[in-house]
Image 1 (tube, rainbow, N blue to C red):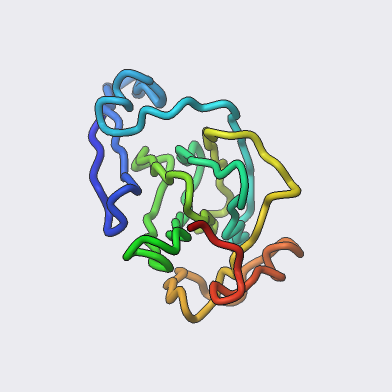
Image 2 (cartoon, rainbow, N blue to C red):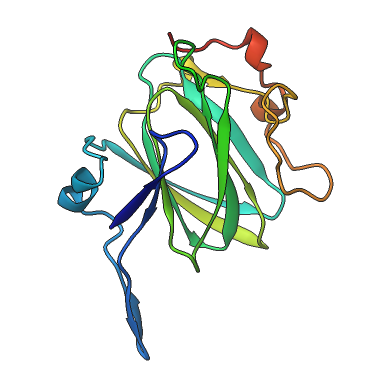
Length: 180
């Protein structure tokens, strides 16, 4: 596996080694030894799988306690995936990075604890998988407002996204619960 640091150095863009021929392809989507070698040595305790239609925006989610690190990838379709640094003590606080992840490019993104995460579906639909380093605790879940001007995220949207009620009611960064 190859890991490339992003503008937020702890967030890594990961590209697996893909073996392909006329029959199709094969790659290891998870190999603890290989991931540890590129800087992702955390233990994962939960796998999640979602399917969403074009224009659905999920996020920006995080947990104030039991912060989750996430290794995310797309198995069908294409998304624009975003991580936002919510660690107040870091010089990158409030900054974000975004990447297109797709079934075709097979890239993964490592989002460590201390970051909010979200994505918007660019294809007709997308199947999104992620491994998490801690369990989901709904009482600690928070949502950062996806279109907060302070974040300056350039979402590739044509029109308004489709949002869950909790995502539409997300908090501005200035008012959000964040990490030290």
